[in-house]
Image 1: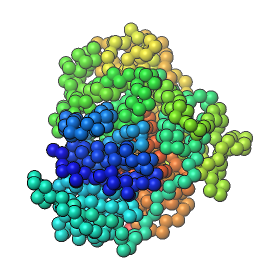
Image 2: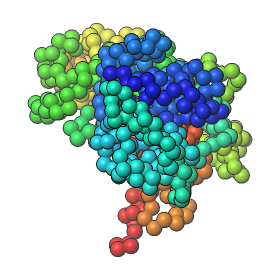
Image 3: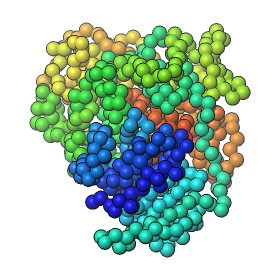
Image 4: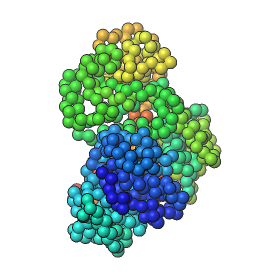
Length: 613
């Protein structure tokens, strides 16, 4: 139902607050069917003095159906084009934070699906305007309203409907000063009184301020998936970037395989790893659509991925998981053995998960597409590449970092350096303590016709991609040695595991063919995204948290993507660039903390603390 138009913020209400601003952040406590969002979008679009970027953060217990959005849009003809653009980027109905880019990425919608009070605690942002015009916030614990004060930017405004005494007191304690109340009652709603407040706390709590870099120049070391994605996101935000790569062309190490598969990870307890993989997977799909699309701008196919259960016990557990979570069909479907075999186009060993939007991508072509996008969007030359140059020395001089090659010759200097060069980052003293390991992975190439002609990617204990240029990729080994040449025992292992999920198929005598790459894996199997810790820095806090640890100024990492670089790269780059620009984060606070490179130092310090301290 469309609310009384007076409750929808007018262009005048918003314009008086956001004009002459570079960026503006608005938090809506009740997205509903999108009426408030469409109204704010229209006001922003029609204001010639609008901020360059509008971040719209919206809470909703479950994702609205496209039909509901359509009904809302049909009431206002001027919303039709906006509705069509939003629908094209609408995510599957799964919990978590979903970042959607609209209007050439100048309007950023972040949908936060789940319990409103819980989601509120997971937001990392400085909010300029709070709109709490629905009823859902009344189900929150009153104490949750205190979180608004922690999120509020200087002089933030608050519009709240149906405010009662206890909630008003809590908001006042959080630092909000109320002005006049607006009686917005209509014939159908006799309780809609909007209270207006401004954030003006009597005391300002001391906290470590986020470092926002005014000098938007950065050096990225490494031109694989991690580095190329970081280039693309930084240049899109107006940064100037120097990209340093020791090879003559991009994506020559772990990103150099013919085909890599992309898919999410599922778990019964929806642990942080699963939540992160879901966010990364869905964000990657959206990022690739904006880039031009799989199979169009870069090589690959969204042909679906079929993940076969290991055995009957595993299959039973996955069936229980499917019954528990009831994922939407456009995200994940559980298929029994007969249905899985029919979909695969050949017999498979058991039932499995089908991810219809997943598939395979040639990483090298994706890296090139991201770098090409940097050039195509430039009005001025913002990306400078230094291929065939080895970054051997990282020096801090005054307020900048200086990169030299192995001969001592300067390559580039900038206030910000991002290490995106996998385990090679360990050569720098600033990163030498990071718990990263190079894990050997050998992929086997099989000529088309020597394996079943599958429709989707098939994976499980091994994987097999559909043929590309006459070759299918199978693998991959997980070896702990550093041999760079192909080995027969690794190929035999790949083929044996593949045969286990393709009953009736035998590899026979295949020639030794494939590629060896080295995954960069952290000790907890999660990436390292963010500011690098300085173990020699002082920490004045007795029981330190991540935010209290000393960091190297302007030194960041995008490392440890392991076997999932395809989906990690876009989200990790977006997360890091949001941190650099002081923008709302695209994921929950606890997930961002799970990726913080300082997490290992914090654990080490806590283990070393004497008992009873």
